[in-house]
Length: 123
Image (cartoon, rainbow, N blue to C red):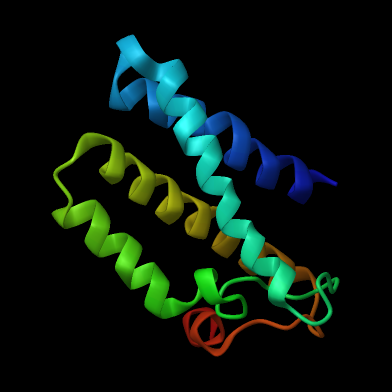
């Protein structure tokens, strides 16, 4: 229960803080843009099964892959356009949030499916 509250607070509330820090005058607009980056979860629809309890999304779903996380990092570093940079920030923060969720899940569930990249970090 606490894990879900933390997870969804990061996904929905903390991005409001990120939006405010990004630009206090336009934070509502930027919060909506950051909310739209949640559409990255549409890649869950290509999984079989679509939902599986105990499965970590990082490293499993295509837009949650290690390669895409590198793309998101590069976008944050190199993109100059303000809105596009914010989108990459949102995608990267989404991956951070999901990674925290995977680590939390792994710490309480030995049978959970954690991707190799996170297993190496946790070992």
